[in-house]
Image (cartoon, rainbow, N blue to C red; front, top):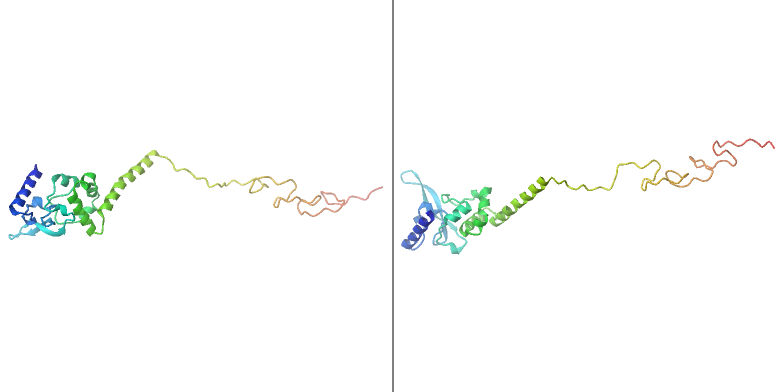
Length: 224
């Protein structure tokens, strides 16, 4: 009902004046409106002659990028869908740091159906070196990432353990450190080479001919 009254009043003003002039708009219709010359209307606070503070509608130096939006007064539907306020002062970028406001601004109902508001805040973001399009793209991916992380945490699935292929177990004494096979009997435990026949198993020195292979002592002279 309010929008019908506002819209009817705007048509009356345009018909009476021949064009939409910001200074002629009531403060309830000022913010988010666009004059006939394409400039945006802003609500400003000025001291009155009596010393009081009063709000009045003024023409800004900011043009609407979309030329189709001349002589435009925003609808109540878009005001609600985008979370904007008709009583907002000036053209401030403060709202762009509010995550809840960005969520509504980037919502399907606002972003795709309210070109005037999107055009306005795209210009405001650009003046701050930001991109509203990129901000909305990030806003769309963030909930999906949060849902994926929540699902991963709630499932309680542990990450797979990747084996390093090594073991701390020591190989059997005397076995090959690589294959684990025992060396041949009588071979050198380090090199694996067979000891010469009759040699000392420790020093590899050959035993004297005819000596005892254990004590290396020469046998007693023959009694015959």
